[in-house]
Image 1 (cartoon, rainbow, N blue to C red):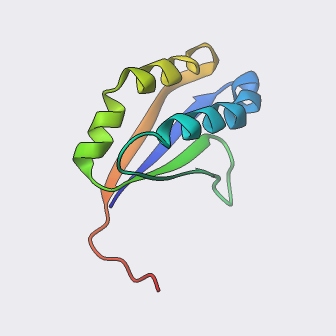
Image 2 (image 1 turned 180 degrees about the vertical axis):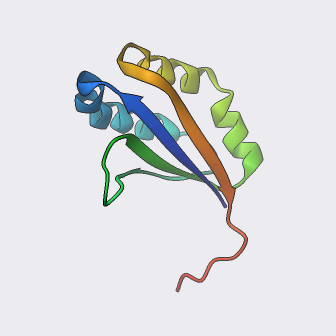
Length: 99
């Protein structure tokens, strides 16, 4: 499994729009092979960015999403609200200890 931690740095209007935007992203992602989940997360001590955790089955399927026109169109909807470009870190799950 691949996990992507994404941080969006948005102005107040962007933060207000973020939940609606994520709902739209989730609707579109549901049609992409390999999509597992999308979650809005928040740091406990400091809620200064709009953050997401995105899970995909594997890296090739994640790349198909990241390179898609749908991805580009959705990301461009946040451009007017950006204080600086978003950042992301990608992780591969090596071993899981879930029940």
